[in-house]
Image (cartoon, rainbow, N blue to C red; front, top):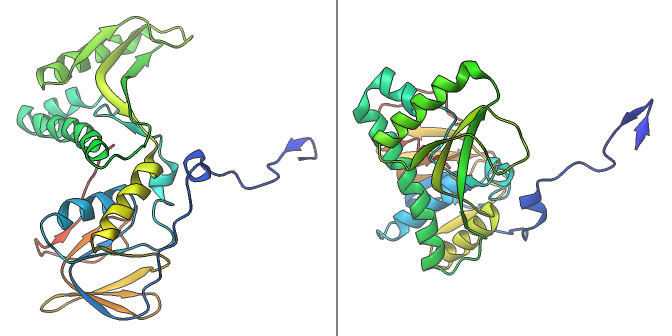
Length: 259
């Protein structure tokens, strides 16, 4: 549609991942419950946390404000990579090799873990191994590219310097990470959610958490006043709803899952 020589969408654009996956329909929480672990947020971080913890025998509830996967996970680039711009040389220089190694290992492990989970559960999520690239078209950044290759390689990542990438884009140089991947995030997430739900993990949609109380256990409160009592709480939402609250307990967890 064109108005005053400006083009507008006739319909609100929708993520390809959302448009090409089925809609979930888990119930809203309508009564107070008690669990071992409450997970706030039904995206990739929350569902994968629930998957790992269910195997340890915990009673778990996942609370999602809208529909699972409809936040950041449903609008992701869908790449699974340990490459996050030019970061390894920076981490090494600022924080040291030990922490840089931990960061590299955690991200490389995540790539393989997602593949392992998909294969073990026969999840058809279009997982494809790919290389990942960061390139420059300016001479002034070439040294940074070389430094990144050296740093990443020293940390166990299969990184190399190249002068051409598999796209019709002229470049000065690039760093390539091998053994990275891409997938359909919602086909993976929705299948994993169904698997854990069938194993007893409670999943609630349209259940927004607005407050948390701390006593002997944690009590998190929904926008409709329902309460979930839990020994441990994992905040796996895109933006922590309690960001301004102070919490010193080691049982209150903010997971960082980097894809």
